[in-house]
Image (cartoon, rainbow, N blue to C red; front, side, top):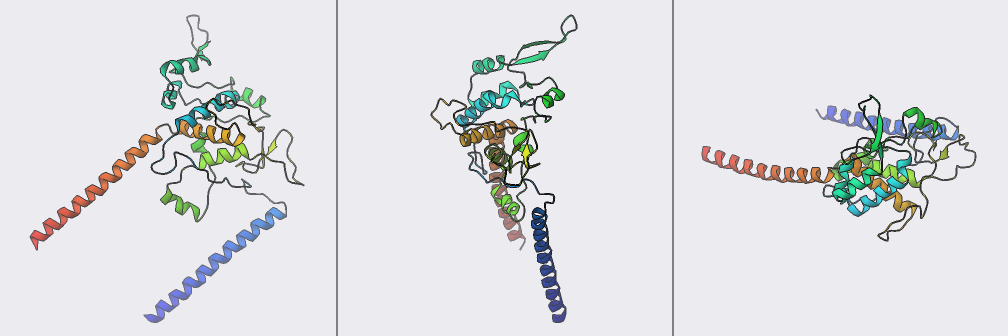
Length: 290
C-alpha cells in the first residue's frame, strides 16, 4: 500500500514537471514567434482593470456619468455607430424627464411606412422608436469607413472583452468581475499611439495595441481633449470621455443591472435563512427520534 502511494506521488511530480515544461516551452515558442515575425496574439497589450461604480455585487450606475457618456455618444459616436436595440424611452432611466426624452428622440429621423401610396417615408423619431443607424445599409457604412462596417453599440460592452487567462479568471469567480467589456472599450479609446519602429501600418488604419483583432484598425482616434463640453465641471479629457462613454455603453447593454444585483442579494439572504431553518428542523426531528 505504501509502495503504491509512493509511486503515485512520483507520478504526480513527474506529471507536474511535464506540465510546467510544456508551459515554459509554449511561452518560449510564442516569444520566438514574435521575434521571428510570426503570427502575433492580439491584443498586443491587455486592458488594465478600471474602477467602475457598477462593479461588484453591490455596484450601481452613476447617472451623472451615464448622462455625460450619452452626450459623448450623441456628439461623437453616433455619426458612425447605431444602437438599434436601445429604445429612446430607456433614457428616462438616466434621469431625463419624459419631455426631455421626446425632445431628444425628435432630433433623429427614422424610416416608416408604407403610406397610403405604398411608399416609405421618414419622420421624426418618438420615444417608442429605437436609435437609428447613421447609414442606410452596411454597404454604405463600409464605403464611408475605409471598407469597415462600424459595429452596433447596443451590446458592445457585453460582446467585447479580452480573456484574462489563468489564474486571473479563477479570482474573477469570487470577485464577480464582469467589466471586461468596458475595460476593453476604455483601453481601446485611450490606446492609440505611434507604431513601433519597423512595424508597418496598413494604409487607412491606425495603430492601437489594445485592438482585439489586429495591431491597427480603420477607426481614427475619435476623442480629443476639449471635444465635448461638460456643464458639471467634469474634466474634459480623453480619459474622462472614454470612461463616461464606456459606462454609458455598459448601461445600454445591461440597463437592468442594478435590479439584477438587488434580486440576487435578496435571493442569497433568503437561501441563508432557509438553510438555517432546514438545519434547525433537522436537529429537532432527529433529537426526538433519538
